[in-house]
Length: 317
Image (cartoon, rainbow, N blue to C red; front, side, top):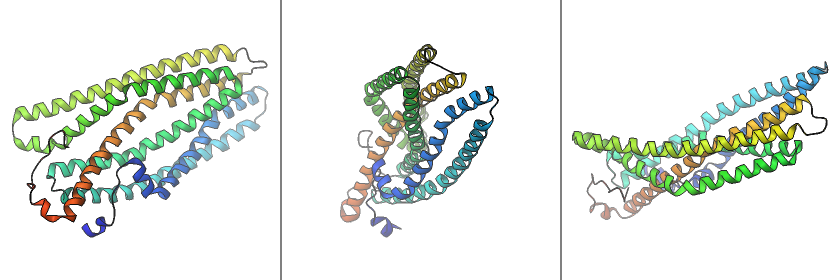
């Protein structure tokens, strides 16, 4: 197993993992894009269906049913493909992580937790990247359709996205520091439990709880701000859409549907942004240990200077 892993210079960054398994991951991307292009067309089709039904025409209803069935088929295929793809990648990287930790003479506590951290990166690929692609397609599609209805609605929606980016930039460094603190604590979990010292155990889990609360506060603040912007865009769209010439009930339903879709995609952004910061911190942490393990494998005599059960400090972890 060690010889097999030695052939791979494991890159734990998001780009590194993508580059290594790009064809499998691109397959999931393709299905996600196809799935959400069908999804973003649905408000428009629903609006056309409503106008058709009012006029006693069922042709648009048949089109909507066909598209909805296609959406179900693509979604089912994507979920099945995702499970097979990411299970294989997760197993491969977990094996390599264990080998790197063994080479670096990490403790069992560190090895166990770093394997879990590796799994967290793959969890982001499996769910987080799906949300990112879904949100991008929803945002671009909704903005395009809102521009089709009225450019003023699109402009206001674009401004709300700019405010979202400023909120993200202003909180990014603090969120990264909190993820670093959290992962430092997680790596010491088994060690603290095995110590048998009640006060150390209480302090350890108390620190993790405090960090989680702080991260949750940042997400709650961002989500609340994004929701308020969504309400503002919806109110503006409600005012402007009624001034459109020859507006129909179906057009109003479609317009409000795209505003709601844009709001849903926007409110998912805080979790996505925080997840990106978290997995980048994990990737850098695992990368450091992989390099350390590779150096020890290349120079075995250097490993003798390190105690087998040595545990790095918080700043080293």
